[in-house]
Each structure stands twice: as C-alpha cells, then as structure tokens.
Length: 236
Ligand code: ADE
Image (cartoon, rainbow, N blue to C red; front, side, top):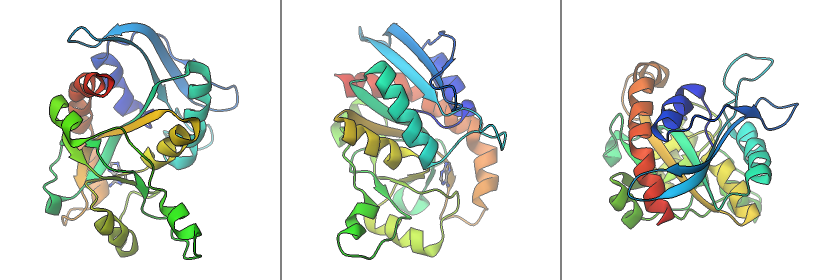
C-alpha cells in the first residue's frame, strides 16, 4: 500500500513489477499493479500487488492520508486476498533517536495514531489504536533495516501536542497512512508491517516541507533498494 506515485515508481521497478496499473473501483482513484510469481531474490517467489492511492480527482494531488489508505486497503485486499499487507513509503524521523535522512525502518512495535485524542474513558485507547505488526528487531536485522516505532497522523507538521504522543510511543517514524492500513489488516485478520524511509527530521530547525522536497528522491531510492530484502525477511 503506497501513497505517492513518486514513492511507488522506484518500488515497482525494484520489485520488477511490469503489470499495467488498473483501477480498483470506478469511483476512487486507487491503482493496482498486481503481478504473480515475482522472484524477489534468495530463491523467494511470491505474488505481489502494489496499490497506489492515485490522484485525488478534485485536488489533482496524490491521495495521501488515512481515509484513502483505509479504503484502498479494503478494496485491494478484497481483490487480491493477501497474506501480508505492507504500508510502504516515506516518513518524518527523529534525530534525537538516531534518525537520519534515508534511514529505512521496519515497524517492530504496534503502530499508533499520534493525533487522535479522545479523553473519554475507553475511547482514549481506541483513538491511539495500537495495531499489531509482524515486524520484529530480528526481521529488521535480517533485512538490513532499522527496527522502529511508526506513528500516524494526518498532518506533515508535528505540533507539541502530537510530539508528546510520539515521545511517549518512542517514535522513530511518523507517517500519514500506516495506522489506517494496519487497522484494516487487523480487522481482516491479515499480517501487517510498515516500511518507511526518512525524508525529514522533525526535531531539527529546517522546515519539514523543505526537507521533504529536497530528500524525497533519495529516500524513495533507499526504500526501493531495501524493499526486496524486507519482503524476503517478512515472508520467511
Ligand atoms: N512523510 C514524510 N515526511 C513526513 C512527515 N514529517 N510527516 C508525515 N508524513 C511524512
């Protein structure tokens, strides 16, 4: 499951996916690239479907964020019946936790929302979510990526109130889709993992948007470079 075409193109190439993209639903912009029998190295062959959320028809930009992620995951899963759902893309990182531009993280702890504050008893943990991942420190090590905590919200920035939630979760990567995809995966009873490459460090002085624009190509190349090894390690 991928949010931006700029992220998906190098990943499709790294996985050798040549299938033509097709719509998943006539009313949504999601595009599915589904290919059977892809060899991903080390003797591992698997069917792979890369679903991209596509271009929002009204705003003309990639349909990023949690609601396209959840709907696209539901529709793509209904069509492909996956055994593993991966939210792959870019994320903001944290210099104070050893983050660096281009670092690639595998979720190795439950994925949480960092911007759903509902202080109404049992609604509070519902808001945070805490969805399971099959990622572990060992799988990350086998794949040559960093194990980390991924948190999700619907904004590129990180106001203090969100930062406090990220801090208490011990976040390594903040994105805009993983927890929504993970919620669908948990609901469907399908294994889930997030793989995120860092485009910006949110605890450094340069504006996040400037870092994101400068580093997007580099981070997506790093993501594409690592994705076959991550899939192999997750499928082992
Ligand atoms: N994707 C890349 N950088 C991000 C950030 N800082 N916040 C959310 N999603 C991102």
